[in-house]
Image 1 (cartoon, rainbow, N blue to C red):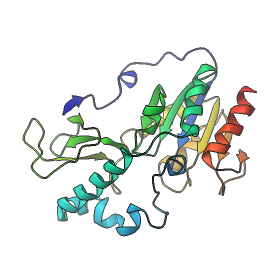
Image 2 (tube, one colour):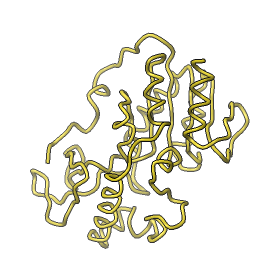
Image 3 (tube, rainbow, N blue to C red):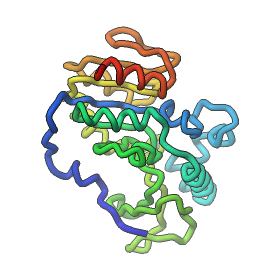
Image 4 (cartoon, one colour):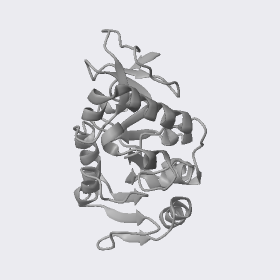
Length: 242
């Protein structure tokens, strides 16, 4: 188990944008679903077996930490079995033409595995654990389980490094700042129903906006590409790059 910085290295110092326009992408569960990861709303997936109040709140952790650990251990094991899909790889390819900042609501590591350079995880990372005593103590665990009795260097139980319902979203101010700077802002596979992440599109006041979704809920002020993530990002790539 290796301790890692609470924030990525590039977020600890001002980023000097590379040549080209700043393209900021907000991704949600829809982009990972095509790799085989279930979303909250999927039937038959891990989330269908549990209420969020049983496994994804601070109260659930206090009441039954074993159940919470079992749930996230199962999600981590599932993540180890899937791969980035063409949508993830095309976002990486866009770095040849733009400075690309990926802001993701997803806790998986598929953007990392596809090679994206700048990633802001709004809701934490499944492949990391953190101390229950000091949230700045974060550890890389990969796809290994967290067990009761696994502790940080201060002797406190480790928990999943994810943002549960009812907890603050520490990365939001960073994401908000990037959205405001964007020349192009793209939403891929997000229902735009979970806040504060859904508010980022409104912060992108100077950007050309795109929404990639097979069932878009927003049409005003955006260019809609009505398609699943893999096909939609291919169309987006063609529009932006030619």
